[in-house]
View 1 (cartoon, rainbow, N blue to C red):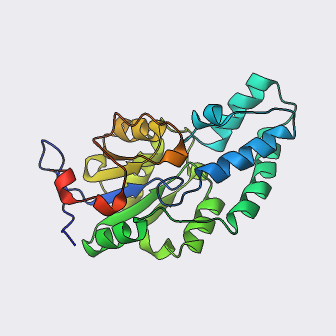
View 2: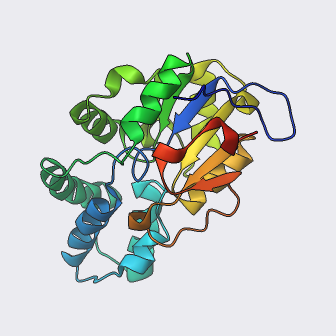
View 3: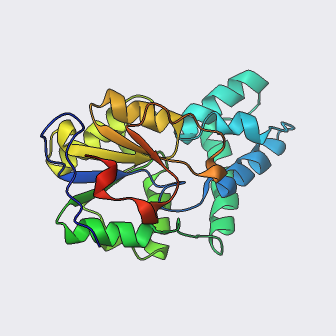
Length: 226
């Protein structure tokens, strides 16, 4: 196992914290989210494509549903449709909470190097705690930020800036791992380095603004950063 000491590309700022997105990075849940979203919208006669939903990957449920309610003139409120989605989602996740391949080993490697770890997810805290609890990862994270804690959805940098503050580090001492275009944009706007994780289940995401792009956590190594 290689030593995970990461320096900024072209700079000499030592990385002290790693901030993880959750859906599509820690847990392979994007298809499950989309199934629940499709079913919740179908209740109102809206048959939405996977491609359209993929444009909202990385955003908060409120950001997405507010846009869709307006676009399709759905006669409901955000709170009501979210409640309907959550009922479907938690039922689906009960037996379908699968970690991303290599994520356990990566988290263990980072903890062994005394790096602080955070979760910054557009999901709400109840769902974040449910998932990382089922994966037995809760004790590994030093901070958790969900959509309950922020006003602005990704690609706004608020969620990552708040995560850095909770971890007691400057943004330039943190690196983000993201699988979504809007998440990568949020990380860069926050002044952080970003690893783009190409997860095919997250749709055709443009990760080109990430500092590096990977397809396999098991191959993530210090040589990818320096």
